Length: 227
Ligand code: HEM
Image (tube, rainbow, N blue to C red):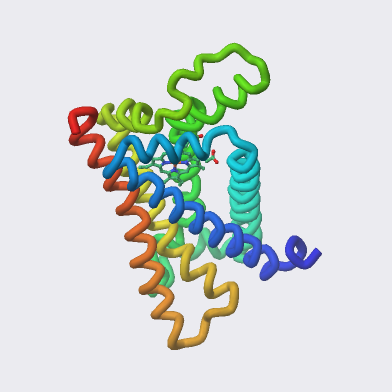
């Protein structure tokens, strides 16, 4: 099929899954910002997004998007390296005007994946997973499954986790700033005037999304349970 067999088809898959993931991040960041203003409202959202059927369907869909995005990232990188042959090793100088992020998208993606593993361990494994296990009749503690604030306080009350999350979010910023306009370029919005504009829009958008997450980490790292 075209989406698997051709290079441009594979790039389209990367772009469409990437844009969908950016939309998820926007929603997720907005949801998390609520935790700064009202712990009660945040926990209501967490309860709403618990182990209900629609939340489980969304989780499976999200997981599929992440897996497809990663598999295609490795596939495209291997294909690019094969196309370049030995040139990669013979030429040490980086091409001009190629940003650092665009040259390191796979490495940034791997850092983001490691951070995501830690994040799912900190939150999902203590919230949605025990709820699902409980529904399946397995005996697990479900006291804090909908208490998002409790898990945020536990996580960011620990300085090591706060620093690791900031490093993770910095990698996410580099990945998004390049990914945003690169996706739109692949999907056809690549005329000369809009090229620079999309880059600017992508930079501002990625910065706002990442700063939203950073605000929650910093707020709870500094104020913890005393706010
Ligand atoms: C301040 C930073 C963040 C906080 C406080 C936070 C908080 C949460 C919470 C409370 C959950 C819900 C767990 C559940 O009910 O199962 C969650 C799930 C999740 N988060 Fe985050 N998050 C943050 C940043 C991020 C970032 C930057 C990403 C992606 C790069 C991300 C990706 C996810 C994913 C994929 C899930 C699982 C969603 C699902 O179960 O459907 N989070 N997060």
